[in-house]
Image (tube, rainbow, N blue to C red; front, top):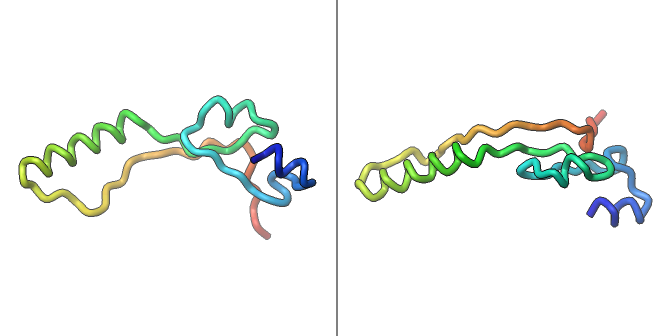
Length: 81
């Protein structure tokens, strides 16, 4: 996607912002480097297992579950004026 945008003359982040998911090495070494949302897989998996266990035990679990994540800012998303 980055290459296609650049070939069309679009500048990141000036013309369009791009953010990646799961903070892979691709995000870090892309040109330009991409900001990314870091998802903590261990915590997500633990939460999923807890919910499944509650479901199997007939216990109602919350409708909304917040799993922590973190923004790794590499400058590929600009600010709006």
